[in-house]
Amino acid sequence: MVSRSLFCLSLFASAVACANEYVVPPGDVAGFFAELPKDATVVSFSAADTYYCEGDIVLPPRRLLVIDGKGATLKLGPKSNGFTMVIADQAEAMRRTGSRYVIRDFAAIEGGRKAIDLKATLNSAVINCRMTGQSVAGIDLRFCLMARLQNVLVTNPARKGIVVRCGNWPGATTYNSQSNHTVLDQCRVYCTATTTAAFTVLNTGGVHLTDCISEGAMADYDLFLSASTKGDEERGANNAVVKSFTLDNFHVEHRLRKASIYVNMPPKSTVNLSNVYWNNPIGAPVLLYVSGQVNVRNIGWWNPDFRIHTRVAMPHLNFEACHKALVIPDHPDASGTRSGALELVDPLTNQHKLDMSFVRITHRAM
Image (cartoon, rainbow, N blue to C red; front, side, top):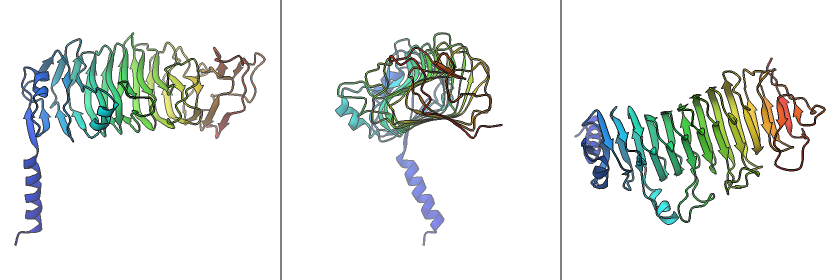
């Protein structure tokens, strides 16, 4: 009789035997992935300390493919989109959501247009990687449902750090190709002087951004959050299928050109901003509001110079358990455009007086 432990060990050994690991040679990385055997389940960058690739590294369809950097550095050519895939249209995108990828443990992915350009996946993950010096974005996720970015560092992105958005190929819309319920956990973007946004979330619901940092040189935004279906930021967002966003334990340690957090979400969506820390006056509004139900909680330190700007006369803002220095009276001042830290700036309509009907401060911290 085979013991239970021996039987389980035998099953485990069989499972391991079914996993096929291939080592990427130091030469043609893109060519290696183009010819990757269909039985590959793990691809290891363990044959060299540094790899070079001029073009795109196109990922083949797989139920699960683990790409293990093994601590190696991958240097990309200026036109490379890094790890990516080719999506012809929405029909192909729907088929590709059966594929899943885990990209992990790269000491650095340097250069290129993007380091990682994932499209049309379900439950993929990027773990413990550093992206440096990409010209378009460190990571770009399009139609990546339930993706997870964990312990990711993006350093000196020329434009955007991390982008989470819907697809933009033929047949894709802002309603049918979102990156819903994606999680960014312990990610840091270190901005350069040309960075437009550290984190960007577009037309995507249920995203959680937790324990993250934005710092470095002055940038336009730390977080650019919008669900405008036509990309028109001169009006309130109108994507009715985007319902929520959560930001928790966010640390900001640099100056901004336009705003730290930009919010243009549908009126019935909920935006939760909790435990955000700005280390000093940042040279721009801490919050630039256009639309959405915004709940700000547990702001433990507030500089009297901090400002909240709204582009609509009747903002929907709730402040709970925030520092007592965050003062927003029930009525605006004589100008009609300012109430303590809240100010109506560059209004989108012909309404030029603040209406405080939907602004609340509760459980003020002592």
